Length: 197
Image 1 (cartoon, rainbow, N blue to C red):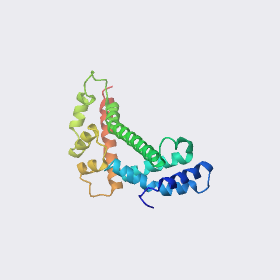
Image 2 (image 1 turned 180 degrees about the horizontal axis):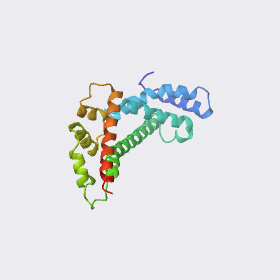
Image 3 (image 1 turned 120 degrees about the vertical axis):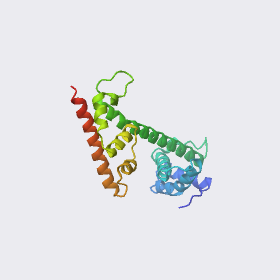
Image 4 (image 1 turned 60 degrees about the vertical axis):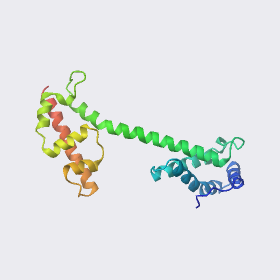
């Protein structure tokens, strides 16, 4: 496959094949335009994830294959249409990822705070309650480091692994140990709150 765009008349012929339902038209079109679309996205959005370029390009092509009528040849060339569609798909993909990342960053702190909240006064941190402060003060150094990372919204397992001094272990082992420490911290804080009631 080539990153060079086919000539306009070749693109028009490929599109015509889609319209009439030629059996090989979808694969012919995809083979002709996917690589140029990926190259276009790399140029327009430098430094992004390679998988995102390919996903957005494929989404644009698949949308056209499924609904050829979305393209109006009288308004613009097929190349320009596909570039516009792929750029929009790329932006949408990045927006979704950004929102997902933001939600994930805040979710663990919210979960942790919800687990240990004991109706603190408005504006107070739920971790300021005396029984919680005592429990947090009793954490071992590695537990305290993990707790502070959780409270700050950290999500990267490798960061927790470094704090625990287990960066030399396999990713699966790191994930297992980090989860175990997080769960133990949550359980201790929850017990501290429940002991007040």
